[in-house]
Image (cartoon, rainbow over all chains, first blue to last red):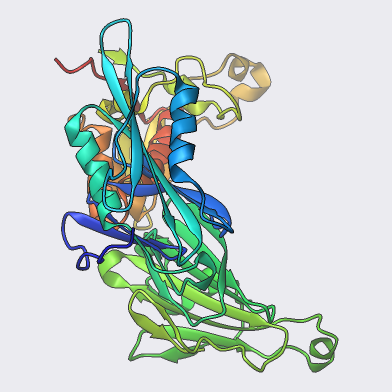
Length: 294
Length: 139
């Protein structure tokens, strides 16, 4: 199933990476629904008018019988489901369901599945449309889809206006996606938490000033001294926390960095928290092509 | 032309089921926000304030309340993003064009901008500053 990834999309293609799934979407498609579970989840893709496609993943201990799955689906649907044969695309098996209304209008639904042994994941895709053009749009996404490895080993997230690269050992723990306000959260086994924010419309809420962005997004208490870096237009905040509470593991030390992206009128902020000062750094993290050192 | 009910837009969304008279995405994108002609634009401390006339309520005629100062209009201050969206509401551009332009200027996806713009327009419609007018089906 894995194919060579296309070149970084420019112009009419949009690149998305999520839990080690790399997709290349048509320019007007975007992710409107997501899941962070590595065991089972889906990305829902839509254009301006309607939902176009859903890409789903399921962790499988053993290789499933994709043919039997699709046959069962065909039987369940009973009518008007045509098996597209063993090779819908290279490595994919699929079926097509055609539904006709009383008015004579027809709609198509394609369902394809493929098992990736390297990541032990079953990847399925469902897309709808009318005719060959719609099939081609979905097939194009599947042709370019690449499974980079197990979902737990993902080291890059590229979605919702953020491109975050991180070291190994971190898992995507949460994603709160609101209009013009995105927050992604990672955690590791040492109970460290990294949060990455991107908030658009910075000029409206004062986010064009890195210090203001830091206070707004990271919740830095007023009166706290910030460290400013004029070269990178960033502001930083480092809180060691009271020693007594650190010893009993009740206080989390934190480090934060914020900067503005003037060309996109957005402010970004990254914070890292941990129980002890040791290891509370952002070494190896990069957000939107910018290294973040905490 | 029929008006998409801004009364429906002003009421809070329900958790389940559709609001009566709710419109689909296609119809919403083709709808055109039209400004209230009675709205007056003013400035206050560098911010743009939109003044909309307010109708006297029945209880304002009570003798004790008549003496209270009555402005006769209510002001809504707009921030930079609000001014941008308000300026785009020229009575010609539909919601899709306004959202697409907003998305392009701020590096957002279309639906991200659509949600922010429609939420803002819903607020303006609830305050009587504009109305969103639906257009008929394309031929």
